[in-house]
Image (cartoon, rainbow, N blue to C red; front, side, top):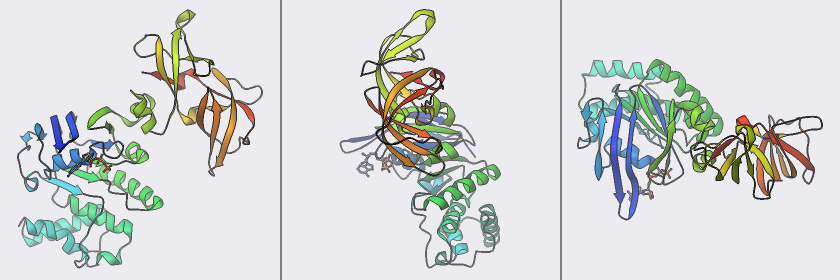
Length: 352
Ligand code: ATP
């Protein structure tokens, strides 16, 4: 196990600046998720850490060792990429033995001990003699995780490891990964474009945008206090309303929406009046029935309703734009209906 320290890392592919002066420290034993839209540089960063790609400038340190110019196989990193790519003509045990054999690591008895231990870790003992085709997709995935861990690497890199699985299996594997980490607290970096996956699995998320780190922090902190409209939108598709904010008496703030509606807002982080973005999470906006109150209440017209079993997704026209809400299915509204929606100021955020 080791920490990973990245300083001023840049990488260019022809005209594309895939990474721009990225610096970050990943603590020993941390589970970090690199998130962001397609093309933001997640995979490039992972490939640079693994050594599969060379940086143009900057340094990468694993533990106390500067590995920037060190070959991938000497970095002691476990890798698992999108397609788990087990060799179909080899049994599970042979698949696990392969990386050790290639590197001429360990004697045969030590190797077989490591294979048993790795399979136990992913809760698949006794399948060493099977071929990949005799395993389910989820089991194959777990064998691939076992293979990445076989050398007890310092760092485990996972690039979209669950993206080939169907939704149910993905949920199961997420729980497995959390469980596995409790047993082996290895420094792990996960690349995912799936917001829920990053928020569920990681101790820290790093949201990237166009080759840079936009925001990093604990999942809950980044989700509830996005630093920029980009992060607010990327993590869970918040409603973003362009407003003009001004202080009122008693240190309270109000803001005017594009349609002229005035609403109470929290104070902006920099304390300055003027244009800002009001962030309203879908789950924080409620339908306000007769006799109910909220800090902010505005008229709305229901545009569409989609019932989803445990919840319903509502799209309304309010504040001069479209707002999306997640509401309990017991709240019955119909398209075209005039309603009121509201939220508490403490749940909303004002950012620039
Ligand atoms: P995705 O989620 O789609 O995998 P990503 O965030 O992992 O995206 P990268 O694969 O790191 O993004 O790519 C970052 C940028 O660098 C993109 O514009 C991509 O087209 C470009 N790029 C990556 N690898 C190469 C390459 N080998 N040659 C040329 N351009 C590349």
